[in-house]
Image (cartoon, rainbow, N blue to C red):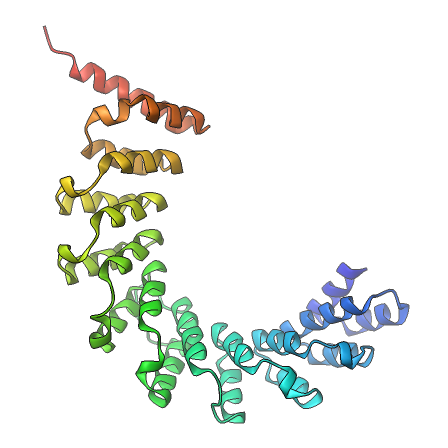
Length: 321
């Protein structure tokens, strides 16, 4: 019955919800959860129906408002705030929910209603997160409503409100080159205090981040990077494209290729192992400990590839008579 109620709330089936309520086959906690589902879908009619059956003292206004802000339903949020005590809601979290989900009409409504008396640092960071989600694949920031809202907020509150370090690391890890370039351009003075190695490590941990990797290695001197940490980050995530460029671009003596091989085997990154084979000494692949790791991994494809590669290297190493 609980599943049926939640499904009805999700789809907005008013009659089915009323039938369920008339059956009296429910617990108070189920009504609260059903209310949150209705709020999250912006079904204000259902929210009102459910609350008529609910003990107001037990009602969790905080959860309901947060769910409604997640949906972006101004009508639902308006009804909740005018029906219950505002002080019982966490408006800072509610605004952050709306910002993070790109519900910009609701964001503006809340800011105007409460004269921007919020934790704007949290709101701006969540708006930045929403803007990252909307960045186009070519890195362009045009027609990005959350990015436009972000710039408006910064103009109203000041650039200092945005946490630049967190923003740079988020953009690097998510592969959002447009935002990375924008941050380093708009906040050039503040970005000088950012550890380039941390930013590069974040890019190595992400996916589709090669453009950001290239941007950072071209922008900063190699002395700014802890190359071994960068290499380890790329190996842990199986980012073979970045690993190959590191081995081509920098002195291999500064990169522990042997550890990279072990990391690739432990994580099951076969493509990365193939790249490392091209740059490492064959003897590293013959180590008994490494062979045991691969055999115990259960990765048959990696086992077969490594055994064949090692056999070929042994044959190639034999002197010709």
